[in-house]
Amino acid sequence: MKLFVGLGNPGAQYAFNRHNVGFMATDAIAGAHDFPAWRKRFSSLTTEGRLGREQVLLLKPQTYMNESGRAVGEAFRFYKLDLDDVIVFHDEIDLAPGKVRVKTGGGVTGHNGLKSLSAHIGNDYARVRIGIGHPGQKDLVSGYVLHDFAKTDYQWLEPLIGAIAAEAPHLADGAYDKFQSLVAHRVQTQEAEEQAPRTKTPAKRKTPRAEKKSEPAAAQGTLAERLRRWFGA
Image (cartoon, rainbow, N blue to C red):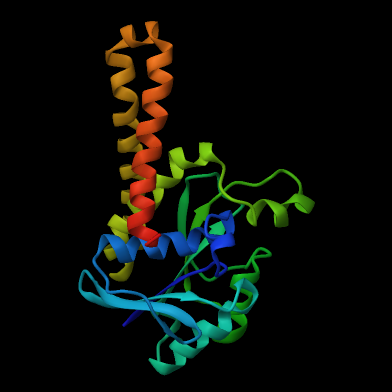
């Protein structure tokens, strides 16, 4: 059994906060791999299914970020897991937006969810660090992470979350480097495909009104459809 933990805060008002990107990742994994409906267990919302060769429990603590470890600890002890069975998805301000890095153990860098986890189950679990960027000043961090993603962030957020969901079986199998490289490749490939039509058909630039209306509408429609599937909203 593997335990995939998404970190975030419960409630609709927090759903699209940068701090909730861990919830977004686990929602996307559940949707992409046909996990059953979420249910309440371990002071969390959980759903269980298979990723590759592994049985995986997806868990979203409903205790608010600062008490995430209490909820995770309940599931951790119930299943008698080891720390190398635990993979945590969380926002990372020290990574550029759209970047993903996987590491085991290390510091918690002021992240209250990680602090709580390390206090309750130990520190040597795997972390999928999802870059959201830094606001530039330390005193702005709290407001920045507890604010919704900007509309311009959707351009990298949607393909990134989709890539994380698609490649999640490699995480379950312990192939962290492979997961990381394949996520980057998927995102780069999608970016290249989206840019290709513009370079092939430069004549469209002569009709800026049509371009401005059609491209954002298509992007927002795709995002909305995927978010509805992933988040069930």
